[in-house]
Image (cartoon, rainbow, N blue to C red; front, side, top):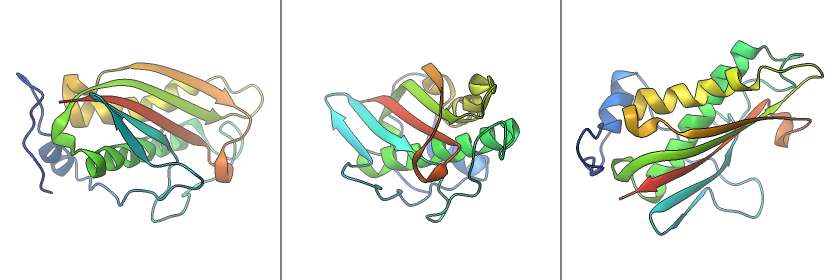
Length: 163
């Protein structure tokens, strides 16, 4: 992977090197499913639209967490959402410009009685931390919902500060 050098200041992590070290490749940006763009910059912030765990345009697993999808599977899917969010940031401004992942909101399509939403969204949070180090630590919400687009088990949206 190539890209601009980190500019986030002292202690900045080279996201491209970390992705390579982790054996991860940024996917192609997921095309929007409706009338929106994958990410938009306003001032020093990039707002990433909700990312589903699509791989090559398909959901690896569908259904409700706590029923058709286990919590562990959902956490892995949340990692894919996070990787898709990083791809959206990369396509708009480049990962090297990320100063901080500021806020992550995770939505978990939950079966009745499932209350493990925070653990599911840890899949995304942990990926941001692994790739961006301290720059990846963020505020977060993890919300249980009844349905998500395409019957996806999880969706993640991100706000990132950029230089």
